[in-house]
Length: 467
Image 1 (cartoon, rainbow, N blue to C red):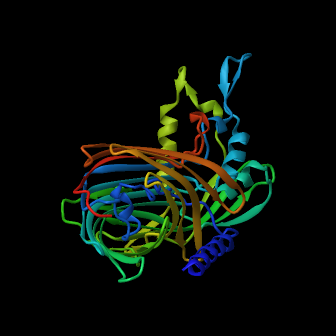
Image 2: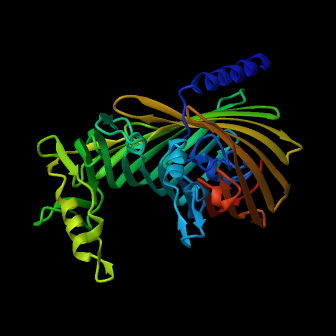
């Protein structure tokens, strides 16, 4: 058994090291500080074999899990005060330098778990059901274009292809899950699986942007020639109105976009050591077939020329020239000469990997490690993004559990060592739980913070019986 345990640990560590060169930090951080918790049932969402310590059953009530990742912090803006002009000045070059070192762009996710239930059927089996709502949004920064213009490349032409990046993506869906686990007789190993029924509400994604950018010799104009493709679907249909503008038309019908995914997991309890591994969201994702459209240029290429701004026209009668701004807005609306066609499409949910290892001391103190990553599926390539978390959970009293954690990640260029987290769980009567957690906080100083995740909710855990 010792040789088997050593082989498992060595093999998994070798896998982690082997993927670090091509790995990148996750675009949307998971709230994983509860993975090694003694009593929290939320970990069953990411490994079907995990169950609250000594609990016979649990009910998870509505909770909120909110995550945010920014391309720069407040201090990265480089704002400084100019006493001679009595104004605050933004150092744009400093902002671009900071954005260049952060490749994640803007990512916002919100998870609302509506209602869940789990029960220990016997000493060797568990069953759980869950439901909830997920929203993932991401805007990538086309840093190649920003840096090209910042460098003052006059009289040059450059090609950019963003087909392998999410320039803009937004996806909202509901889910209902049914799963369970089973302990293999005469072995300290459990295996489990969960089936997730997915119902898509809204989807919008820019799939590709190919662009030729040309600057004049004297920088008097910039010309873009672009080819793009975007997809939209969901209960709010996107269509062209009489004026030729794209507008959303919400409907009150039941969602018609569906998908199925599966989670699988395994767990081995070897005395004080607990090892677990899982794959989450296996499958093709959601097939969007409600109000589905594709947006492409009519001529496959759209050329836009920007000749600058006559600043003398910006002010009129002591204020801004509103007619000029209205004319600019109307021009921008008419620049992309697009065509809209009906086209169903699928949007995958990144498959996630979790590997956890923990050691429990005195039945009240647990030190844990967690590798959590995702495969970002693209048309050109698939990127594995991962983070690593070390945590320490303390369960000193029947009504209290506290935890501290630190996550570190590698984005292909930079190793980020310090992203702390903390959680607090209070119980009344040993059953009613309320919890609050902040995870993957990029900096303890708010003005330097680029990412954070907040989780708050309540559970009911009943009948503390056998282990």
